[in-house]
Image (cartoon, rainbow, N blue to C red; front, side, top):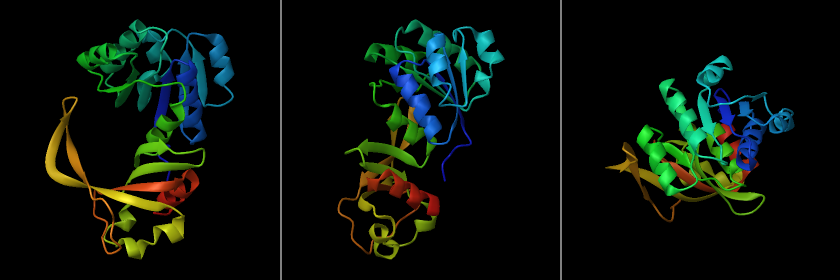
Length: 234
């Protein structure tokens, strides 16, 4: 099922922020969008749950409009970097569950890391849709678009598949998706931006008798609708 219980706030409605906010809403999420430009706010109102015009560097206004109550806040401002830092610091003070901030260079990313922002994005204009998919559906950890219809998806192994062999699951016949490989966690832990994370090995060509294990990641190729069907059923 879609993880639509999270409330998202997108700050900054340039090309990327607008695309991201709209795509999140299209995936069923509650989305609040904020920008200082009234025209941008008016333009996106028809697509999302709530759109508000105000200066997001003002901590009192952030609190007044409920930004500190959001589960995930994405600071998508691209025109200037100073507002990104100021807003990020206020969000950190409010101890939000998840903060994602935009950087225009490696130097800006380093600055954001230094103040405590661990999730930093360097988006191109057309990446909002990709990020929306990974944020809304938490079981999709990566996505790569091959064409307008087909993509490669890395998903957490659904609990109902654990313990079954590839032959038993018949994913191609049932869901019209192809299992390319499996990424399986190994004992080794790695450090990523100061945090300890699991390390995975790619198993390569998958044999029909191989069984899905807990914490496996499945690398699938197929259409978005078919991936959704697989995840919703399992």
